[in-house]
Length: 127
Image (cartoon, rainbow, N blue to C red; front, side, top):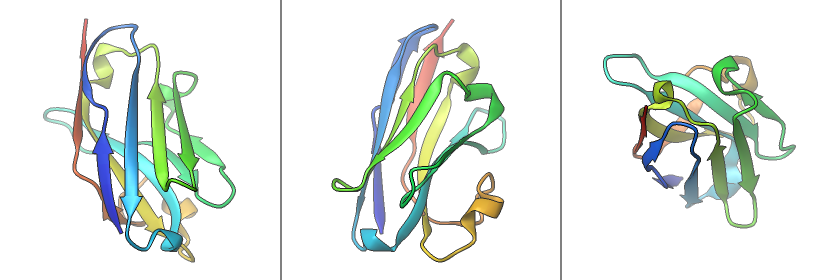
């Protein structure tokens, strides 16, 4: 599975951005998809995840109510809609995918269950 992320850019605080992650290859093997981010001088952190089969979503507390993760199974694409952006959201955002049949949801906020990673896309929020 290959993942291609896009949609990053520069936005003012309070604005919105929409990140996309297109999957190719053996997309039927995807069990879940997620977004992580890494700010300068910080560790990579979980942002959101979605079950590929049920659409159940999970978010880290700091983005609840502002970010929405969704997927288009037909297009093998996962979207992260980011609203009310804050300066603290500035980071490189990575999409990731976990294989079907793994117990990914138990460790969904860790990088370990995600076997596939896309390249990062930079989001910069000016204050």
